[in-house]
Amino acid sequence: SAVISQKPSRDICQRGTSLTIQCQVDSQVTMMFWYRQQPGQSLTLIATANQGSEATYESGFVIDKFPISRPNLTFSTLTVSNMSPEDSSIYLCSVETDYSGNTIYFGEGSWLTVV
Amino acid sequence: DAKTTQPTSMDCAEGRAANLPCNHSTISGNEYVYWYRQIHSQGPQYIIHGLKNNETNEMASLIITEDRKSSTLILPHATLRDTAVYYCIVRVAPTIHAGNMLTFGGGTRLMVKP
Image 1: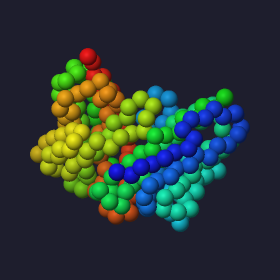
Image 2: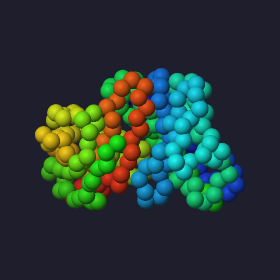
Image 3: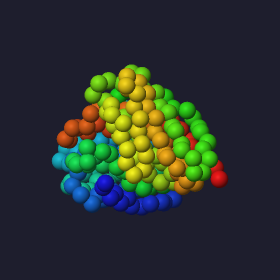
Image 4: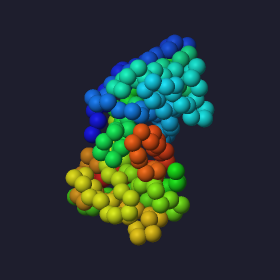
């Protein structure tokens, strides 16, 4: 399996500010995904991030609010911009491995609370 | 990807087998069945996946019916640490650089009791 590290693991943010979440993988992967999990809810895909191309956003998510970078095959960032209390969620990075049957693995998540 | 239907919650006695059902009656021939679990305040953990044959690994067994319209995840000897939300997900056959994401439903909240 892939080892995925996310930073920060937890943060409390002020309304109107932006926060960048980092995702580091211990092996090169082509596909990375960012999910959001609001309190008490299931996971919702925000976007798919390929190295070297623009991220593909799901319905309801836009680049201005959730800009994503994917500078290389082991790293990605998700920024949550101009935060409001409704953005309080767990943000999860996941990767599709190019081995072991292209299984998808998840990081431990970044818990954001917006006050 | 096909939708799945799971019971909202289940209880299981510690040490007994936990059998978690999943219906995926609209599954296509090229779609796999994946199981993940999410222990409170952690990221989802991959458990197992299969196409049509039964699968077993160190965590669990996956039994898929012959018509592939349903499956059962079996935890042979449930422990308190198996208390989690279990997600059954159907996903198009993974190929290199396929980028087929996982679509999560509500899952089954399994409570293992002493």
